[in-house]
Image (cartoon, rainbow, N blue to C red; front, top):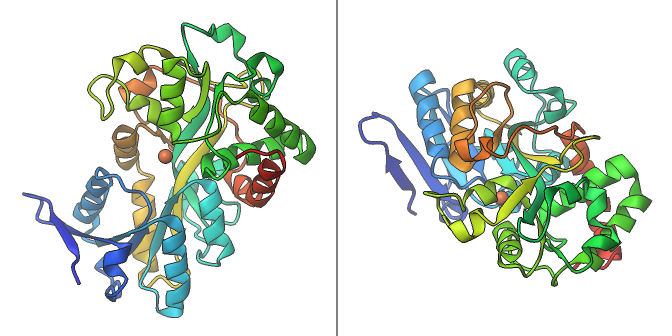
Length: 349
Ligand SMILES: [Fe+2]
């Protein structure tokens, strides 16, 4: 049984990180006052800085179990009352909702969290809350499309974009949440019509991830792509997937700026109902909502902070300010099953 242990040189603290498969046959220790067990489906090395800083500030050690959201949810369910998990963090409102439906979270009431995180980004009963935001927007090939031609998500489904759009498959949770937001604003029938229009406008059958859609638009195989902004930031000079042929060819357009605003999704987390160290778990979430932790989130994966006045990643800052859709994120989760159904009915592969 091997726990990967990453020691931060000079910090005098250590974070134990294990993957779900590594831990499948081992029994994580119960968290005591001096530690918390975090189950996380975020896989960013920079998140470790957050854990280390939290330990330095509070003396509470963070043990991390990484896995995909469904594995972690199943694991907590199977562990039942004996689960060592204190906090579950995952990506996308739909997955947070799944954890909520599985009865994993217990409500938290915290003046710190309520004071710093806007209401639309928190579950109405305090079961979970958002820690970062991601905007899912229109990206366009700037040799083929003038940004003045772009306006709303609704417009993407109209005939002028026939065979010109690159977008992922319907099993992608980000697209499911986008459709969930359309259900919230337009109703089921119109949202389904929208899906049918999108299917007609696809430049190719859906394949690949967000970065592949951006590449398709940059190469001219499509004129438009739908993607989260942090994926585009990866093509910027000096970044992980740095590529001037893509970065300089693509423009970012925030839809619905004269109306409800651009669709925003989140990563977030909550305190597990059976948390052995509930108090430590709440302190951890409060730390993650602090301006310094929010700045690390923003810089590390080019996401948007959930707390106002936190500096953005400079690449993201260049996309400009935008108005965001303020629909409560919990509603995106609740609409998820219907979103999946109507995408299927519309023939969205
Ligand atoms: Fe992502």
